Structure formats: structure tokens, C-alpha cells
Image 1: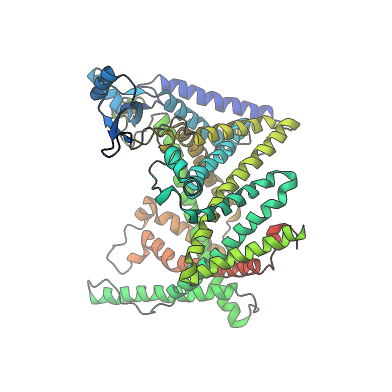
Image 2: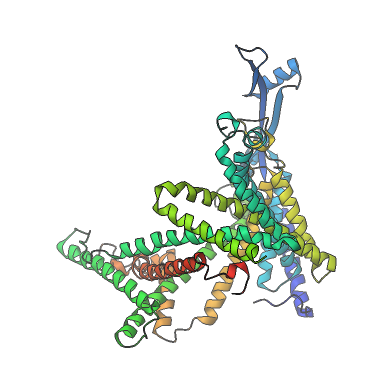
Length: 370
Length: 236
């Protein structure tokens, strides 16, 4: 399906690339001039205005606390004209709205909904990345290599950021530096009595081990990383051993020890009652036989001959059905993802389909044209 | 040096693992297990730093050596550094309305922030398209490899078709003529698909799970007892 990019392109391949790129370009340009165009994102600004409320302690006049109160734009403007911008905080949030809201606003003669350039550029970039990845289906190429490099860089950065804000901050910084964390990072956290809990000093251990782990990057300090690595491996070994014995061996075995006779649920007639009982009981019997047969197949300490061999063969049949089902599910999952990407290209980007009625104002005109 | 690189790591492995096992059996030690779990999460986060550092080292070397494709390494580094920068500093993130004076109090991935932008318009489309592309490769591989040469292969193929068709409108339509309340309603593709999943697939999956769990338990024991030391890179 693909070949290495290091091989020089033949003139025919060059021609194919030129035709594909040109076709996409022509389609995009033509589509942009039909109806209301394509690939735009609209947002509605939402002002967030806050003014400070300073409360002085009744017991000690020098002690005061500041809390922030959200106010309406009118109240905020009145406050600013009276007191200036001191003790105020304001910013504007932008909520994405479907294009039909913008079209309705334009039809009504104006409003606050505006085109979002950052999101529109992002949308086009996402479309470019989607096409660049799909281009690998033909052969390896610079577009794919570029997209591949972006995914490596962005995902490495993404997981580091998530690791910092979701793990290091709540599990380490909040415990070792609670006051700093509350003041600058996570204002919603509860401070321990006295501002610091001495038992949390135990979290210096993962901090030191973590720094030792990063020591692997230094040529002469590589051995330092063995200690945290040993901790990770040991913890996982202990945790997984107990977890798997509990959830996979014991509970799965327990779930297999089941009654072989099950009363059917369909009571519409005597015949149907007997029939559904047969089906339900057969399911239980086949389930138990299947688990045992598969386990016999996995048992390699005995040669698979005679009765053991025949049972193992039944186990193979069950496993083939399992693999077939797994294959079917994998294909279904991938096709669902593919459909989502195609929908993104045709709906969000090109505005050719409108399953969510996001652009009902134009869908009719586009329908006439295509 | 042998003590630092072999004995102490083996001791740490054994102690950490045994603590985790004990915490499952003795209520008194359950807190130890909780701490060890939290330590593990913190170390896993530090491992991301190690990964990022390795990425930098590798690609900077490639750029400095000007090896073929070094420009792509530049793209990797730029994307990595920019994502890290906007994410750690929460560039463009809205503050938390409850604590508006604390800049870092807002959501890291809140809609509108630059980090969200990178996730929404780069990370998400790229990764989901890569996974979606596997649909073509799975189909292509299946077309080349699947041949109904024997009974086992027929079972595999047949099940795949039943499961695939049973969850599509085409499958429901194909056997829609069988009355749903009749004795043969189990033969309707959507019901057959459910039956295959509940009985045959459950049996096979269960046996595989039990086999995997036995393997994990024995490997864990080997690691904790110091029999398997491959993670230390000793080769023994």
C-alpha cells in the first residue's frame, strides 16, 4: 500500500501527486465561492468582569480579606468610571456557536457573534493534518512526514503538561508546598491545619526518586535511575499480581461456575417457554465447556493427544470465534473513527453535509448545487 | 558499585512489591499501599520528563549531525517546546471565576486556551486520523491473509462477518424477515451477533484472561524474588 520515501519518485508518481494536490486545491477554491463558503468558526464573546470586595476584620482593623465578585458589564463600567481599573479583573471568554446563529444574526441586522480567526485557522490546519495523514495510503511523502513530526512533538509536550498539572501539582506540590500551591497554582485546595502536614514529608521520597530518574539523561549518572526504576517495577509487580489474581483468575473462575439449567424468560406460550429455556441453558453449557476447552488448549505440560487433544481442538474453535469477534470489533471501531474523520472533512470543514443542522440557512442552497 | 547498581535496586523492588501485596491483606498496611500507589503516579509523571529530555537529546543530535530528514526533527522540537510552553504557563487559559486573581487557577485544557487549541486542532485530528487509517490496513491485511482453507479459518471469518453485519443496518435488514417473536428469532443477525459475543467470545476471552493473569502472577513473583533481573539491564 505504501513504499519508502527514500526511493525517488517516478514521473508517473509525480504526475499523480500533482493531480491530487491540484484537485484538492480546485475543489477547495470552488467550494469557497459557492453559497456561504466553507470552514469558518464563529464565537460569541462573553465578558467576565470582577470587582474586589475588601472586608475588614471586626476584631483587628489592620486585617482585611479580598474576595472577588462577578458583576454585569453595566455595573463594571459604572465601577470603573467611579474608581478606575484598580481592584478589577476582566477578560472575555468566547463560546463557539453554530454558523446558523451567525447567519440568523446577520439576517436580523447585527449582533455580537464574530468570526474566530484562531479557531478558523485551527480548523483548516486540522483539515490539512487529516489529509496529510491520509496521504500515506498512497505512499510515504513530505506531507505525511511533516504531520508525523507534529504528532510526535505535540503529543510529547501534551503528556508532559498533563503529567505536571494532573499529577505533580496535586500529588506532590500541594503536599510539599501547600501554601505556595494555594496562592499560585490551585486556589481551591484545602490547607492542612497549621499550613503544613509533617506526615507529607514522606513525599520527599518520590521527589528524590523522580530527580534520580531524570538522572538517566546524564551519561555518568545513568545508574541513579535504577533505583526509581526498581521502585516502579516492584510496585507494579506487587500491584498487578494481587490485582490480576483477584480480578482475572478468581472472579473469572467464579463467573464460570454457574448453573447449567436456566429457566427461560419468554412466557408467551409453553412452547416458547421450553424453547427459551433450551437456548438459555445451552448458552451456559457452551460457556462452561468453552472456558474449560480453551484452558486445556493453553495447558502445554501435557501432550495434546487423545481426549486432551480433542478437547484442545474444541478450545481452538472457541479461540477462533473469539479472534473473529475481536477482529470484527476492531474493524468496526476503526471504521467508526474513519467515519468521524470523513464527517469532519465534509461537515465541519467543507460544509457539504449538515447532519447536526449547524448551518440550516445554507444547507438548502448547497443541496441545490450538488 | 555492585551494591548501588544491583543489590539496592533489587532490595527496593522486593520491598515495594511486598508492601503492595501486604496492603491487600492487612488493613494496617493499606495506607502503605496507597502511598506506594501515589509514589508510582508521581514517578510516572517524572518519566514523562525523562521521555521529553530523551526526545530533545535525540533530535538535537540529529539536527547537529544534519542527518537525512533533520528538518523534520526541527518540526518535532518546535512543536514539543511550544506545546510545553503554552501548557505549563497556561497561555491564554481563562482564570477560574471563583478565584479570578490566580492566573494558574484556571483549567489547563479549558476551551479557548492555546493548549486547548493545540489539543483540538493538532493532537486530536492527527491521532484519530492515524487510528482511523488502520481501518484500511486491517481490511487490506484481512483480504490478503484470510482464506477459508480449513474449518478454523471458516469459523474466524464467519464470526467476523456475523459480528460486523449484526451491528449494521444491512445485517438487520438481511434477516429482518425472521419474526422477532418466533422460535427462530435467535437466527436474526443482530441476535446471533449478541449470542456469539455472550457465549463463545466470553468463553474464549475468559480463558485468555485467566492465562494472562497466571503469567503476570508468575512473572511478578520472579521479579520480586530477584530471579528475573532483566529490568536492571544486566543481561542475567
